Image (tube, rainbow, N blue to C red; front, side, top):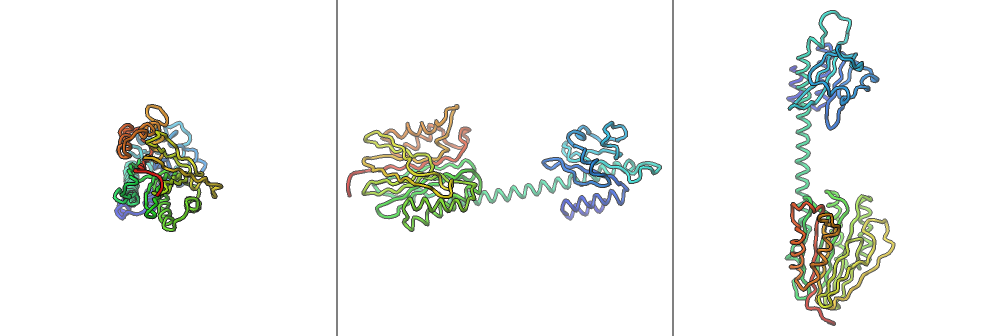
Length: 396
């Protein structure tokens, strides 16, 4: 018992604790037949001694042992699987069964009281001490893992939040106005948007959504964002940028993720909006003068879906009048309320078709769809990038 106590206090690995326990049973208590089943997500045989494989393989804890709520002498049990043993001992902790130990003597022909029976209470206590110690180690290790994951999530969240552009970084002029909304479903999200002036006459903006969730998806999106930033400095065309991004995602994701992307360049003076829609939800363009709604669909398959993108159809639109553009991710478009599919997309279309500012438009969408934490209908990240093209006229 002293050896067991020392082993526990020294926080030895589980394997060493079990080995110390097994030696004590065999060497000190003369228990030659031992099976110890313990529960850790599933029932496992963690000690086997003195019993042939074809015997212990037939014992199923859930079918054969869960009926025992107290120690039981096998002499009165009809189940022939237990014939090699003298006693079955269940081990409980907090009213939950954690283990079963089956024991028998080395020499069954010896006269006198069986060693397994003679030391029954001691073995029961000792087994309980060992199993509870192992369970406590498991819970502590689980807690440590959870704390580590929590810190990693906190770090990933901070990194991701730092990648989301601040409103103060958006262009401030009379030609264009930008409003955004971003709400990740979990601590970290797989959505991304950006807006950047690439010259005094031209702006670039994009919105993207990575397939899947979790840290791996968020890290891939962070890498994606870094590559877009680097490519903008080199002033690549949208087609070239699309091909380059596809190559990077194919290489980095190993086929586990892909990214849907809408990206565009807008020239202040030519009023031309050039864009590529790579498998993303079609942004909604509304002309305030003509009252016309257009969906920006031209482009290609999603980034990373194929090793090589076969073709890219570049989209071009001349913004002739004051207009609004809503870009969004599928957390908004696929929002279904009371079983109505694409309810979110319908509400978005209804709310853009008016003369309200882009800020008022996004606010009304959020209000009507009740977009906030705790809404049970929301199952994904929701990102909205709204752009208002103002004071538009022809020529330079």
